[in-house]
Image 1 (cartoon, rainbow, N blue to C red):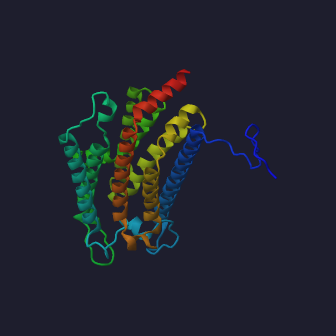
Image 2 (cartoon, helix red, strand yellow):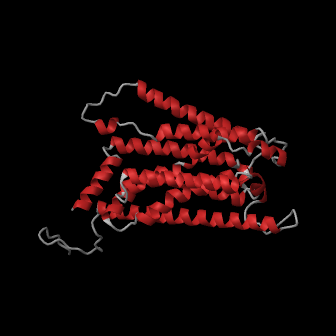
Image 3 (cartoon, rainbow, N blue to C red):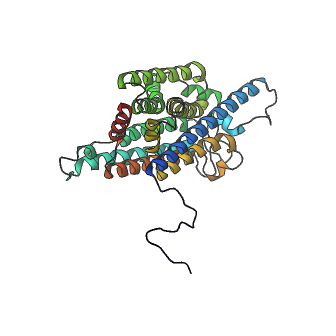
Length: 341
């Protein structure tokens, strides 16, 4: 019979390596890197298909061209509209975005009014997050954009389109429109600057100078090539934001060095990860599958809804980090210690 010996334990089962928080960080860092590769590849593919279809449309004589890679209605309207669900998809999106902005502003005001009873030693946890103020500005700008388009679209139960004369009414190059476009496009360059600062690749002044240069370039490209056709604004904004967020991170932050592992692993939290994947799935499905199924389940409204959900998850993630005693400054300090050692 088998006698258990306390001094010499019998290792009959396959020994598995002990759990290591460092190994878990490496797995999460690798997952973050793979997601950046996937999102960058998907958006570059989307850009290629868009340019290919624009070139095909310029050469095609037939109005019904079956060789297009993106949905025909999306190319015509610039959005996946759902007239059977909303009499005016743009007005519905504008109303929803305005409501989201109002909720963000209300949350900011409530957070400022309610006293913080934590001790003075918890200064890091008392710092105000910029997620809600930034989201409020973004939703207001987004709402204004949809409201502008809503005035030239009409829901007739079939397709919602604007005529050439109506396009001219929204193809204005005003300072107000440029500022609103810059607010929306700034999400990508600012995120890229934040990544380069946290990874110690650039100092804050140089990173924000780079972000300003990126933003100026993006706005300039739009006004140079797309100002005459504002229906392409959404696709251009989505492609620009995602590429300016993911490419700098992909190029300058790997997943093997200890510094890069620390930075990437702290960004992989399941709720925020799932909401980000949802946003990415909507961005890809809207132009490719609008005529197939996407319009029937909500069209572009799903995109605005996914953005609101992503903001909620970002706030939850920020709160969980702070309640756990971890914030971006802690990550930066930890990376500096690693670099110094």
